[in-house]
Every structure is written in C-alpha cells, then in structure tokens.
Image 1: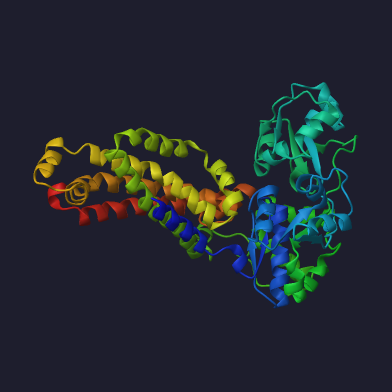
Image 2 (image 1 turned 90 degrees about the vertical axis):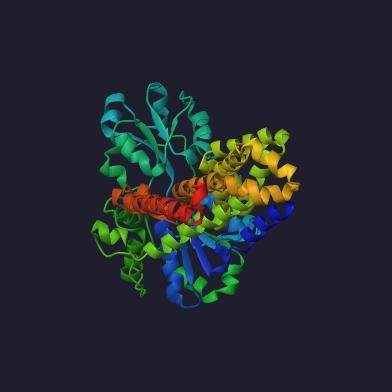
Length: 501
C-alpha cells in the first residue's frame, strides 16, 4: 500500500505546472480581472521576450494569491485594498510603496498602478430605494425585512460583510450567499433586494440600481495594480518595461466600458482585451478566439475544442487510473479482512459526500492550483464505486467454490488470481465504468482552479450569463460521458469470456 501511495504522489509531482510555461498571468473569476489579465498577457507576448500564458478565472483572492506564492502563476491584477486588508491583514491601508515593502518579504512585489479605483459597494433597485428612502448603507438598518444576496468572497473577507455589519450596526443575521456573476440576475428577478457590487460593474445602470453611499467611509480605495513575483522584472526586463504602458492608462469609465463589452455584449474577454491592446495601446496583437457573434456550432467546435477535450480526457483517465491502482486493492482487503471492511467502506463513502469545491479548497494549500489538485480530487471521488464493487464482487462468490479451491490446496494468492478475481471481474469492471462516467461530469469543476477542460466554457458562461457558452461546455461533457459509457460496454463484451457474461 505504501508503494501505491508513493506512486500516486510521484505521478502528481511529475505533472507540469503553470510555472514551467514562460510567464503565466492569472486572474480572478470575474470579467474585469480576466480582461486585465488578458491585456497583460498580450502586452508581454508582443514584447517578444517570452511566451505569456493567460490562466484566467482561477477563483477568489485567496486562491489566486496562493497560486502566486506557490509559483504556479507569475503575476495577476489585484487591488490595493484587497492586498492590505485581505492578504497582509494591515488595517491601515498603506501606500503603494509600503505595500511593496511588505510583499517583498514574501518574495513578491506590487506596481504598475493601472489608473482606476474599483471599490466595493452595496446596491439596491432604484424603485425600492425611492420607496424606502435608501440613500446610504446606514439606511439599511431601518429595514431588517430586506433580503441580502452577497458574494461568498465578500461574506468571508476581513474587509467584507462582518466588518461592514459591525460598522453600520446592520440587523441582518445571515445574508444569502450568491456568486457575483449571478447576483445581478437575482436582483433583477427580485429574488434579493441588496447585493454587493464593484464600482466599475457595467450592469449597475442596466439593472437600474442605486449605489448606496458609504457615509462612514468603511471601504478603502481599491486601486488596480499588478502583483508579481520578484524575479519577473529581473528575468524578463523587456516584458516588464513593456507593461509600464499601463501606468494610469485605464480610468473608471474606460474600465466600465470594457466590462460592458463582456458582461452586456457577451463578447469573449480575450477579444475585448485584444481590441483594446490594438486600438488604444497601438500594439499589434493577434485576434481573439472569435470575431463578433458566432453561430452555436462555431462556438461549440471553436479553436479551443481540441485543447479542452485533451485536458478533460487527461483529468478523467489519469485520475481513473490512480483510483483503480488504489481502489481494487482496498476492495480486496475489505473482502479478505472482515474487520477492516466497515472502516474502508465508510471512509470512501464519507469522501464521496464532501462537496467538490470544498474538496478542491482543501487540496489547494497542498497542491496549489491546476491539474494536480483536480486529479487528486477526481481520484478520491472515484474510489467509492471501485472499492465497493470490488468488495461486492468478491464477497458474493459462492462459498462452495472457495472451499473447493482450498481443498485442492490452492494458496490464498493463487485463489485470488485464478478464481476470485476472474469471477468478480464484471462487477469490478462495472465499478470502474461508473467511476469513469462520474469523473467526466465532475471534471468540469476543475476549470475553477485553472485545470482546464470543458468546464472552462461553463465557467466563462456563468461569468457573463451566456447560455451559449454554458451549453458549449455542457454538451461536449455529456456526449463524452455517453461515449465513455459505450466504450466501457464494448470493452466489457470484448474481454469477458462468454461463460461469465
């Protein structure tokens, strides 16, 4: 068993990381961050010094910062308020130079102020604000009946809900958690009354929202900057110099316009960034992933289709291989040693109940982002059907067959190899097939930590409320699950002797 676990760790350690692919630019999972990350990527690419890779939409602040410290990404757009309050736990919101000095101790730096302040705020529908006289955040305290829908990150940030609630003495006990990308649809459908927003969100006017005044000045400034690993300017001086063109280049109005291109016009953020780099920065840049509106078939079989398919297959089948290597022996142990059956089956059962995003969050501090934690999570989820089916297949064998084998003098290992495993093979194979099909669907979650696959499209579609993009990711995943099912059915018929069918 120790050798098996060592093999799994070895396989995961050999997987290539983002840090091996030139300069890797990360971003958080919302349009503005992804646009800025892609602009940075294209500027570096055009500098011609190294290849830049855009690893957009990785998740919240904590995940992206962990990836930066771990070396899986080299740089990403961040905000001064988030750096001070959320990352450094410095309540004084120091200057950019002071932030840089504190980050230097972590091997990181901050610079290139982009030119706009994207602070947090709370917003309510204009009609509701007029009816209830809502002008400031403090006015919310007079209306405890209001329904708050706040992003999960805002609910848990040190500069988020808990501090705001205390500062304004707000009476709301448990606001509803909601993804930032879906919050506007929720308030537009009157499912919630109050949401947290970014001041450069393009949907504020579209949804006729009133931004409540922060009359206690609770929120600090969130000036957009680049946070990077300290070796970047030294290793890539030309690329670093090229990025200086962004200093104070984008103001709030311009950022709102760029966000609107993605969130309202539903253009891919890659195209929006490409156009900005070419037209506003006068830097030659390759075209994005699309040009204008596309038919669904062109979207479905776009230029990223083969790459996403390759990534998805790698996630599914490498994790499945590891789970077979571990799961079958565990099932054998559970069947052979009755005292261990309940602990083994209970453990793999409990693992299956852990929510996928929670499991990924547990694995990120150990394995960082990308393929490694995704494969580890899928491996753990695959164990239950394989272990249980192996156990069941071995324990339902007729006792008279086992007794006959013992009477013939077959040792335990030979009985297992010659009689028990062949008789249990179809049941074990069914467990492997079930694990593979489940993995195809579960692997879409991996995109939220930068592991790629069809989930990339689903993630982008959720960010922009683009049903076409969501379907362009969901349909290939569903088709792949069916193909995997058929493939395993055909393999089962091919390898199983007629007498055992």
